[in-house]
Image (tube, rainbow, N blue to C red; front, side, top):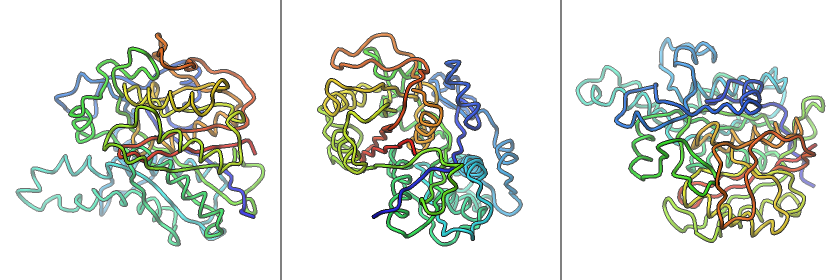
Length: 396
């Protein structure tokens, strides 16, 4: 019998707030974090983004990060702030008290500093120390060092499903008795690289994303970080349990580098296998936090998949990306925290920017917080390359 896996602490930093209290307040007041770019100069400055409203020095102060010998990328600072919140909320006092590991995720790593000094690096070695920060593992290693974690340190980068896969791997390590406690999560900062790249793909919204809307016109890039402390049932403090990680699945439909199948095959497979992993039926799900990027292809593919999996019993569905933007490698962890909040507070979280239903779908996304009996939440994170992950969180 595998031990159950519980979430005992969460931390989050996104465009709509620092911590779960500020985040919940933004949802209640329908306050989006999408706005004008201010972090750096760009030819795409008129394209809306979702920035964390802290400068790097302010993030360093929040994180307690000292940059005496080595600078910290914005990515790492975001990861440290969210991780400190999660660790504090879980009552974690010593890394030695439980068999502990860390699994963190990202897509851009320390790209923000590398692109800042790229030209000067070609001319001299003055800023050569930032080269190593580009490594996706840099933020994981710095968080691990800050917390004193040495036993198990892993970094995952599978595009937009990265931190959902971090949650899944952490739960599997606990279920198979390799660890008792794991800090899992993800972070991604906004960079020129991501903004330029998604602009080149011609999938950025010029006005702000409109998930599951008939007139949707692209995604909105965001930044942020989220972390969750997972613990086995034998060592979790019952008074701190937020929810249970009850099911998960990662599949790869291997269809296209950046697009999902029109019939939702990969999404269907991920959702069905996650339900099987949790020993649940589709009708058991109380709320779906959809991937819901606001792009033409994703919302059609995911929406069709939801209709096929749930039939005439589609539970409340929303995409929270109209608040936070698409935080890329952090998205799975950000929305895992939202799933835990939904269970903790017994609410359905809202979407935004929806006016016209998609004629292909049977359901309408929810647009305000709703009090509701929430027993099981499904969270979808579907990445480039067909890396599709579904997580299920349950009331403990």
